[in-house]
Image (cartoon, rainbow, N blue to C red):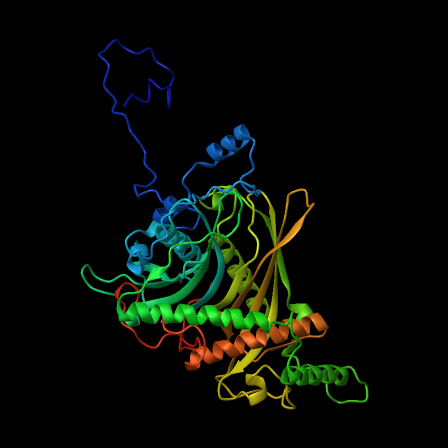
Length: 492
C-alpha cells in the first residue's frame, strides 16, 4: 500500500523518491455467491420452460412482421395431419424438485413475513407445471391455455421447511380439445424412495384447452390410454368431474331461479333486515354480522411482460392465481380482523385471456360465511340466521369465509372491457362472523357461494366431487382433503 505521506494524509505532500513499483493485487468484491434464480416468483426450471424468447425479441418480431399474434386469423396454423394416436399417462408425467431447504436465496421467494410458505408463489408454480405437462401431451403445434382450476386442497400441513416435489400428469383426455391435469405437491422423498401419503401437502386439478395458434379455435388432441388400475381410477375421477361440471352448468343461476329452499332463505334474510330497521322491533343487527357491500376490496394493475406465457403476449394463468389469492387473503383478513387460514381454491374459471400491457381490475367480496365447531347451530352451519344471532357461541368455534374474486381486463386506452374469470377461495377464521346480502345481485352471489360450500362439505365427507388424487408419481393412496383447516399453518 502507498504510504500515508505519499497520499498527503496527515502531513504535507512530499515528493516521492524513485523506487521500483510495488505490485498491487486486484481486489474483486462479491456480494454473494449463491446461484442466480429467477425472481418473478416461479421456479427457474419452470420459467425457462414457460418463456422461450426474450421480450425485446418478441416485440421486435411483432413490429417487423406487422402481425398481432393476439388477434384471430382465418388461416389455421395447426397441421391437419397431426398424429392423434392415444398416449399413455406416463408420457406426460413431469416432476420438479424445488430445493427450498438447500438455498436460502431461493427460499426468499417462497416465504411470507411470518416464515411460512407463501401459497401464491406455489400456485404460480402449479400453473406453470400444468403448462409443461400439457405440452408434453399435445406437442408444440397448438396453443394450450388454462381454462379452469377445478380445486386446490390442503391435505397436510408442512411441519418443517424442506425441498418440495411438484409432480403431475394428464389424467383425463378423450380426444376433444380439453384435458384434465392432476398435480400434487409433496415433501421431496429421499433418492430412490417414493412419496408417502402423509407427505402430500396439496393436490389440485387443472383443465387445459388446446387452441389453434391463429384461429384461436379449439383443436383435437390425443386421448389418454389407460393401462393400470391406478390410471383407471384417475381417469374415472376426471370423467366424473367432467360430467359434474356439465350438469352444474345446466342449473346455474343464469339459467334457473333459486330452488324452494334457497328462496325461503332469501326471504327470511330480507324479513330479518326489515326488523333490523324497524323502530318498533327490539331486534338489531348483531355486531358480528356485516352487510356484503361493506366487505369488498378492489385492486388494479398494469400487466407487465415479466409474467407472460410462452406465446409472449398474454399473461400466464399462474400470475392471476397468485394475484387473486393474495387479494382474497387481504379481504378475509380485513373482514374478520384476524389471520385467515387457507382451506381451498374452489372451482374457478378463466374466461378471457389477459394481454400484456392491459389493465387488470380485481374485486374481492365476502360471498358466504359458514359457522364450524360444536357451538354452531344447524342454521349457522348452512349460512343461515337464527334467533340466537346476538349470543356468543361456545369457545373453539370458527367460521369458514368464502371470498369471490371477479376480474376484468381493459386495454390501456380503456376502450374495451372483458371479464377474465371468477376465482373462489375459502378460508377459516377463528371468529364468529357473518355476512348478509341486501340487493338481489348480492343474494345471487350468496346463493351461488352457498351451493359451492355444500359441494365442498360433500367432498370433505367423501360423497362429493374431487375425489382422491394422491398417487401421482408413487404417493400411496389415502383419505385426502378431510381437514377443516384447524391446525394448518398455511396462510398467505
